[in-house]
Every structure is written in structure tokens, then in C-alpha cells.
Length: 366
Image (cartoon, rainbow, N blue to C red; front, top):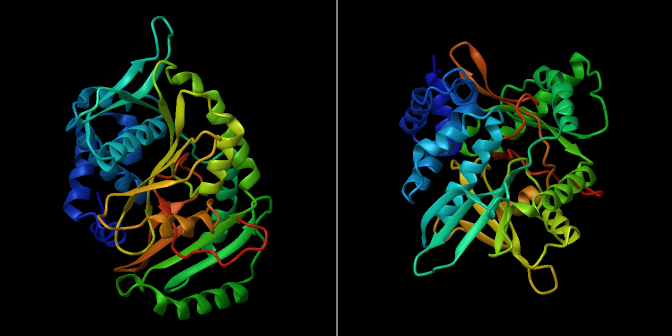
């Protein structure tokens, strides 16, 4: 049921071992959660298979620090599966990337009879203080999902033999009708650029739409979300708000949203937690924190799981590129090209960021 060729290519893209991907999919199936199996199990696609691997990693990281696996599985029974997936994944990455996390607790009441819970509490070696963190998954908006769905037929109509074809469009525009001659020329030009891809990925065929003009809407959503969830953090101890980084959100927009939200005294700042594939053969897990200083601003602090790796250049590539990027990736198969991954707006949230080719400089931003 799982295509062996697809699993091999997912290893090339993510760096996850084939056996780990398979074990993770099987583990998700054994949990016997129909909604989760539908999204991350054997019948799901490339995003689901890698998301299963990422989820199982996070569950293990949290269980190592005292979280009961059964409680995590209970969260995954909820209908908002991708939001729960993002919370668990982000909590696991934080526990793994921050030094000295000795224990984690979840769904901790904010106060007596408050009726509100903070998602996770983190405890550190040699410290008695607790670090409360409230998680939010800010996925694609309905408008962005409609854009992805509307442009997907064009994505599928442009099928280079190899290489990455990127089309730039304003988020408010409808897809144009391209005649066969123009599509053929685009595919021909794209194939000539494949030689610049990493050696093991030169036979990949991909079509991407880079959607520009999303900044203002995203900023408004971020600002509302930060403001709406401040009450989830107890005023008795300083805490953080963390966001799942899943649609290439530029860091400067999150920083601006924080300044607009005017964080109260008990909120230390915000974190952006997520993963990215940039065609270097690995999945990059990244945690970026923006502490609030006395003036309400602050400087970004970067954390990476790879020792000695500076994630800032990677993040700069996403900052300089459009975040909403409906994508089709195809791989060579026995009968020709096979569709491996389709980001067509059917998912409310993308489990990892995907930047096959950074955008060129854009005069009006991304």
C-alpha cells in the first residue's frame, strides 16, 4: 500500500531513514485513531508520511521527559488533528532543542476555577521555576486554501521532464489560460536549469506557484491570534507564546505582530517552531525566539538541532520568498513521472516548510 519508490524519495528529500518513515506510519496506524490514520497513515501522501515521522519523533522526545503517551494520543482524537499535531510537534522540538529540559507537563490549569489551561509547562535542570508555553497553529487561511486549489490545475498542466518551474502570481489573481506552446517552452527552459540542482535530485520535476501580496492579511491574523490567547498564560509566572512555523511565515511579520499586540508583563516573548526542507537532503528543525525587552522589542535567538549549524541563512531564504507556495513534486517511476507531493490547499496546515528554489528579489516584498 505504501509505494516503495515514494519512501525512497522522501528519504532523499528529508534525510529520514526509510525504515524510520515506515515504522512511524505503522505506529500511527497501531494507535487506531481513524482521523489521524486518514491524515498520516498508509493511505496519506508525502506530507502525511513525513508528518507521521515528525509526530513520532516528538512523542518520543516528550515521553523521555515524563509526558504520558496516552495523554498525547488523547489530544490526537480531537477533530482539529493538524492543530494538535502542530502543538505536539512544537513541544517536542522545544524539549529537544532547548538545553536542560528535564520534564514537561501538559494541559496545566491557569488558575483555580479559571476553566483555562496552558498547553505545556517546561521544567529545566537546576531550576525551580516553570516555563509555561501556549501553542498556536496558524495554518493556511480559507482565502489562501482557495488560491492553492484554484491554481492546482495549472500546476499539473506544466510538467517539466526535470527541474523546478516557479511561477510568480499575486494572491488576488486568477490563473491564466496557457496554451500548449507556452507550456512546452516553460518545461523546456526548466529542464535546462535542472543541472543546478543537487546531484541526487536532478531528476525531480516540480511546479510551484509563489503567491505574493499575502503580508497584510497574515499580519492581521497574527496580531489577532497573539492578542486572543494571552489569557491562556498564568499571570503568576512568566511564559511564552509559540507558533508552529508551517507556511514560510517571515520572521519580521511575527516581530511586528508582537509589537502591535503590546505583550503584558508576564509574557516573555514569542517563539516560532518548525521544520524545513531546502533540497540539501535533511529536515531542518528550527526554534526561533523573540524575547521581549524593556522597550517591547527584542532580538531573535536561533536554535538548531544540528551542532554548529547557523539556521539564520536558511530562515533568511524563507523571509525573502513568498510563504504561500502551492506545489507539485514529481519523481521518476517505472512508467514515467509519478506525483510524489501535492500542496493543493486540501490541507489546513503544512507540516514543514518547503523551499525548492528561493525567489528572486521582489520590488514590493513577498
